[in-house]
Image (tube, rainbow, N blue to C red; front, side, top):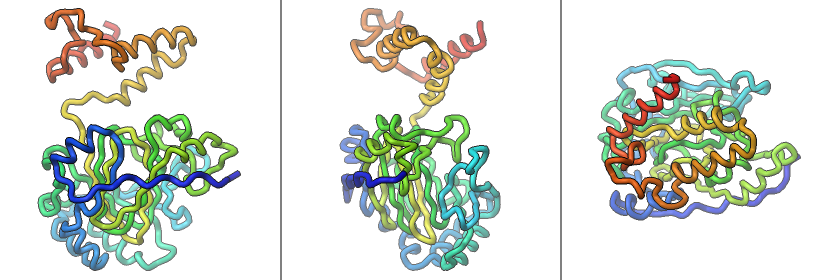
Length: 340
């Protein structure tokens, strides 16, 4: 059963933003923002506005022939990259080949209504297109802060998912529509398997443009909290970590460059959550409630600093984080997991 749902609200937008304003005004709020025209002057965007052929010719200047991985599927999938009907596999396959060859295929297929579906995803730009990032710089942080990654293909729909790092995504060619949900909507999004995913992160099982509310009734609540934005070439979007986002590439030729800004020497909260599933989720309810109190105290810091009563030299793994302390905690965990 499908039904009419609330329309997502438009995301707030900013223009003419610089690195200082981005760091001071946007990142601390931890909410998505459209960054209109951030890359309007990129040579790649200028070439893409002229034609798909000019974009391909521009990219060829940087192509070093390194193989890239592409997701490919039949025309019948209509660009929706997802699980197979029986959930035992996926409705696409992965192939490797030279980027230049894939670009030629993309340009030739641009006017074919029944073209095969494919896109090159998360390809590190310095490896496949060395020099592109210097010619098309991200103005909001230093080049060393995040590796630019290229997403190139025809029409596609990527199911609602999250990233564990803050993300800036800039449209080079085509149009992109983003639908976003706050992290706390996780219970209303009906997430698929955590350990068998399309491209790394768990994804919602709900078909956004035709949701089955009989099977997924709480999705109506998610849509009531949703936001949306449509991006043209040169526009960008900031998506904070853990914000769910559904992404549609709407043109016959699309290219996007994204940047995942990962903290240096960061542990994985996702891995910690999975270990929590192993260690805690099957405990009796009273035990889970007791452990929740411990997590609130030590991890989420709901009250006072849990080590405030200890002298700094006696705080152990509760001391202020440093690279050395992180390594000490890793070694502590490895010993614990090894049973020593």
